[in-house]
Amino acid sequence: MSNASNGECRHGVRGIAAWGKPALIAAALAAFLAMPAGARAAECPAAPNLPSSDGSQPANLGVLKLQLLDYKCFGAYERDVAIVLAEAQAYVEKRADPAAKLALVLDIDETSLSNWPNLLADDFGFIFDGTCEHLPKGPCGFDAWIARQAAEAIRPTLDLFNAAKARNVSIFFITGRGEAQRAATINNLKAAGYDGWADLIMKQPGDKSPVRTFKTMSRKQIEDRGFVIIANVGDQDSDLDGGHAERTFKVPNPFYFIP
Ligand SMILES: [Mg+2]
Image (cartoon, rainbow, N blue to C red; front, side):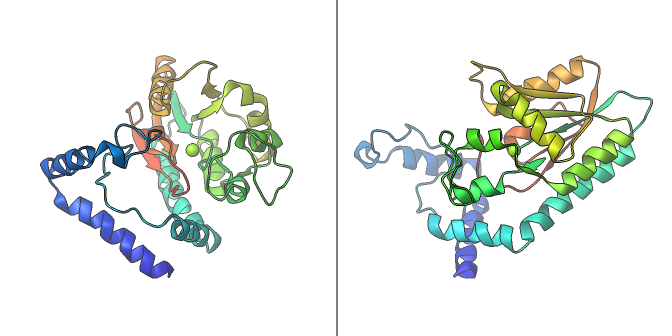
């Protein structure tokens, strides 16, 4: 079942990519938007959330969840994460210069810390509120999960962190977590083995800007402090887009999406 589903998903992705021409994609998108208004429920967005939306039938969500479980539980996820982090560490070690003011930027969730017990308890859904008293079964609200300070380090990222620190590269965490979660986040990072970072930059109360914008501006502010960001590591494109880093390294995260 898993293999058959994989094939179908890959076929779908190839189908869109193979068009290769923006005009065709734009035409498909226009056709999608021209669907009768009655086809969309009132609570649905007015426009597709993804540029690749073409109105075709998506993959089965239940099957995808089983694939996510297999990807994590049989080691492929850790393998793929380790490959990316090895590349990042090799670059940082090669680029490091103790005499220069260099920086490494790390995202936190699914980059530096793993929230796997929370993801599993919520069946890959996102629930912000509510307690985690029913762990390891769910549900488990993400805010309460953060308060437990129980997320474990993603080991290759901790190795990168220590390698950078040993070479006088300053480490900055930039996270979409809110300022109210600062104490719990610091405690969790330290409990997981991270120690000696330069700064932890979090979303401020009332900041409604998209994660992509917030993170880009945060990197610019690090540069304004005189640092050269040699590497930026994250699990979402929104961690990495927007420039202000010599190199970007994206670790896999098929479990959720942050625009
Ligand atoms: Mg993340």
